[in-house]
Amino acid sequence: MNDRLTRALNGDLPDQVPFLPAIYEHKGWFIGETPSAVARDAHLLTTALQAEYERVQPDALIVGIDVYNIEAEAIGCSVNYYDGNDTSVPAIGSSGAVFQGTEGVASLRMPDPQKDGRMPLNLEAARNIVRLLAKEIPIRGAVSGPFSLAAHLAGPGKFFLLTMMQPDLVKDLLKFASEVIKQYGKAFIELGCGVIMFDSHASPDLLPPQMYRELVLPPTQEVIRYFRGLGLQHVPLIIGGNTTKILDAYLETDANNILCDTKADAKEFREKCAKTRRAFRRNIDSSDFLQVNSDEAHDRALNSLEESGGYPGFILGTAVLPYGTPLSHLTAMREAIQEYKKRTASV
Image (cartoon, rainbow, N blue to C red; front, top):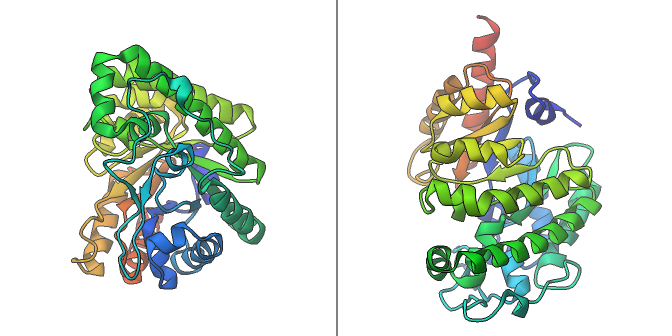
């Protein structure tokens, strides 16, 4: 296996900056299928992952489409899917929550990753892609973070109210969510996958930084340490938004690969990650990639690479790519990495 990403995660200088574009619903585009179709079919998801590997050449693959819905759906939340040619992303609707806040957390059913919801489907795709590509590229199963899962179970609006009015109940719900995530992540690990945890509902754009430290940090640490105890060396934690505001706590989660999203301060990330020997993925803004040309994608990537300052743990990423993003944009970003490599090698 190419050890480029592993070297960056270990704080060693890789042969070039790793490339990890955020490809989730866009996976379906590679095989001419909608996100709803691929999200409900293990064969299509496997085929889409193969196509992503062959056409994009990323430095890791993530098993997942609508990554925040899987555990919540397995517990009982209802997910809206879209038929025909509708390329909307599956989502938990406003009436899809299963926890009203008036009952105890004990009323929630612990799902079985081998039986419930689409957990088995994602595990089947992971098993397939590990068999096909594990010798070529790191493969990670997508799991929710504790706060995001709890928010889906209660409904985000109601859950944020509960954090202020019933913090003890919220802590119980976070504990339950953590156990669900542990079991789902363990199932991926047993297949030879890594895991990557998504918890953007805990973004400081939504949650006060002090509340992150008090409510979110402890269960997040617990889950990551559990995965490490199962032998997983690298556990990425993805939190979107301006996480500069929670960077110290973010580094305390024990995740060794964190996200510097488009709004965050790359310089501060570089300085603090260097002190703790942590890797970080720097996202470029890709929200308008259906409107801009590949030259713009190239320039954004090159500007982001300049922000790295040669830091060994720097990883080039994107915000979530819109369904239908032209392949030329991804090629242009890879070309920017090569250009940056040549430029720095000559200095």
